[in-house]
Length: 340
Ligand code: NAD
Ligand code: TDX
Image 1 (spheres, rainbow, N blue to C red):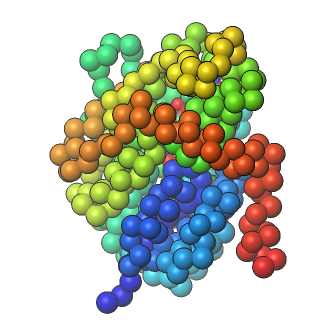
Image 2: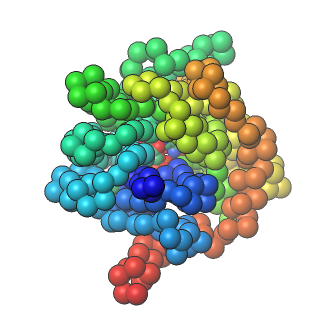
């Protein structure tokens, strides 16, 4: 029987990287292709333990490079595409929106064209709860799959645009698709410019932690491995054309998150520094995951178990995040793949 080939875009990033490892280990009978441009957010050092496995492959390419993407699809004849590659940091989208449109919108359209041309069996588009905009602080309100798209940042606007293109390729060309919209992830290999890994690394080093505004904005946190299991389920069991929200009802204010990390590490709350608020800072996100739960998904981590595991992981893997902070990780691809 022909081996199933799975193209994972953005597999050198945080969630895509965890997903690549999850798939390589769980499905030795699949061939997993990690396609990544290796922007500042792309790090291959995390794949040291799987890079020699026979079912793991790496390709450096830009998803917006139509020629390169078409040539790759022609050569490999993929069965599935799981699309993570994106510019993902809201603060960067406020200072430099253009690359968000190029990668998140144009890049997704190039992949959709290739998926259509080469008749793939399923295209899973990994999106975000941020496309729904923001909720107020009423704890009984949640984002459902029917909530209108009202993105507020250039990042979420570019993600919402890509979601609409994915939907349109399903409606117009009958491309088999699913869209997942997940809440904030955390866990191993989270790039230390995002709130949780930034806080852990700063607190470990006794450095100030910048909290935007009054710290009362709420995010709904999900451990990255629960997100990976959700995408695996949607890839195999998702009803064609459907959107699935992913979240585990773990709402916390940013201040609660930062204080939890500080107290777990036994440090002083004097490390907290309130700084100027993010422009257009969304107040609250909260996901209703009922539809995905009906498909059979159950998260395994609570916020308490997940944050404890994550803090321990950062303590045990200081080498990893120190080489990210120093920039050393960016020479790994050349050393390991080009000069070898
Ligand atoms: P990340 O920034 O850690 O990783 C993105 C990866 O995409 C990097 O490896 C980068 O090199 C790669 N990439 C960027 N531009 C590329 C291009 N033009 N061609 C090929 N590769 C390119 O992001 P993440 O946090 O792992 O998020 C992954 C996906 O999940 C994104 O689509 C994001 O919108 C979505 N998402 C993230 C979260 C979260 O909390 N981080 C939550 C919900 C959804
Ligand atoms: O230094 C900080 N101080 C601070 O108060 C940073 C980096 C963030 N914050 C706040 C802003 C947010 O309210 O913490 C919250 C979380 O911020 P980020 O970690 O930047 O994540 P967020 O903006 O919520 O977006 C993340 O979740 C949804 C991902 O980066 C997106 O890719 C995903 O779609």
